[in-house]
Length: 562
Ligand SMILES: Cc1cc2nc3c(=O)[nH]c(=O)nc-3n(C[C@H](O)[C@H](O)[C@H](O)COP(=O)(O)OP(=O)(O)OC[C@H]3O[C@@H](n4cnc5c(N)ncnc54)[C@H](O)[C@@H]3O)c2cc1C
Image (cartoon, rainbow, N blue to C red; front, side):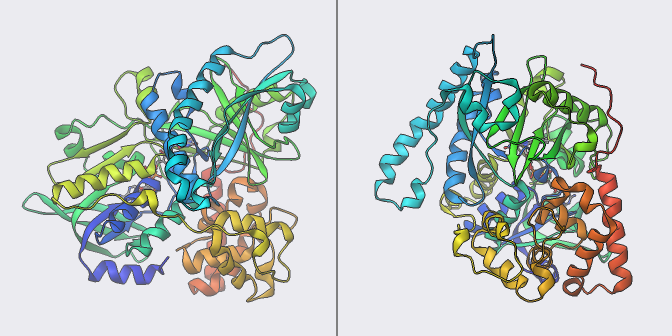
């Protein structure tokens, strides 16, 4: 991505066709879609890219088996088709993940789950066959992944796939497929593609109000959180892609005129544990009582467990802490299922995010309809796009940009279904750099695709940059923090540890050690012009951020009450 000061200069100087507010997956998608249809696009994000809900998801690119229970067939099918496309467009970043629903002695496999899985197969496979036929002459890569049909596996295979379950001696299980990604990396990848089509993106720019001419939006007033400066960004069209913040920008306009239902945020908490404590090769569906279930998933070398779904009424959307009661709920379900005895002290991280649910006033119903994307056009001409899922970002973006195209009476069809997101690279073909641990190459290839070469070039610049950020920890390199600062607008230690790498989620205790925060600040300092005092202040500020985010679950085990 272009450097932030260059982006700022362009945002000051130029007038744009479209300004997108919000740098989560929806805003990034709108920027890519609009730019690739020939619009000049600016995107502004108030904090860091993906710092909202888009770095706090379960990381699944999926149809959502549980929505079948509510007969949301259209939603599931749409998401399954997107899943298929994402694996083709970003094969390094969106990867197939087998999932298992186990059964134990004296239990039978739940036939209803089998019926649901049949439907799931049919909804993705039908289209796939068509795709296969059409794709016959296409590149091998475009036919890369085809989900197999679900099947029943025996107890031994369940244990092979879910070693953590060995003590419980499962007797059989359903095996099916979904896909998994790294959510904040997906956002950064989509933004980078948007920039290739000319979009100008900058973080730490908050939109405080719309700029209007005769009642029509003709830009936005922006507050630069780094300099404190305010300026007007001129744009013919304004797209509000601010997720759970969507009704904060123009509350009266949205609620009164468009009858936008109030956004009722719902908190979802995840925890992580090392894969030694809970080893999984594939994902598991874990019952969590009262007909609910959670996921236990292998992710970036650790185990990711989540999620909860509770009304969030605390109001602060900037730092959403996992509640102790949510952590207790997840541990209770995990321990009951795997016969483990994990406590908060065993956790390698915890994080929470809020879903932008659309409230209907009926608390039960609001959860069911929530994942639908909604688009509103209000009297100022602002287009608000909210709801949806990480998986369906491309469709949401298309919906918003189709509206712009229609309004302008232009001929400009959506192209994002054929725009690759980054470029896959074979880890074995990456150049070897002295000091870089062997397991880092696979991680780099999966995270950056071809751009991993640039990260390795940075690692070769100075010996210490080839080292992992954490001694004896995951293989994420110090070079990645420099790469983040140099080419992805990482502006703080938190940006590097929470969203460029994911160490804040997977090694929260280690990164909360002052010496690790200092090491990262020292690596980033030459890129960002920090002197010694600033380095110390930045390291400290990350420790404050980590505490505010509650990434280290250090509370005593909270009592779990169902
Ligand atoms: C716990 C949980 C688990 C989930 N798991 C999955 C999953 O596994 N798979 C899936 O498909 N979906 C999942 N989702 C849903 C998915 O994460 C969200 O639908 C998606 O990330 C929303 O993206 P967004 O861009 O609309 O919002 P956000 O990512 O929140 O982006 C909005 C951005 O707007 C910025 N902003 C706000 N106000 C302003 C302003 N005034 N000026 C400038 N910028 C502003 C914010 O800082 C923020 O970065 C999950 C959600 C949660 C909460």
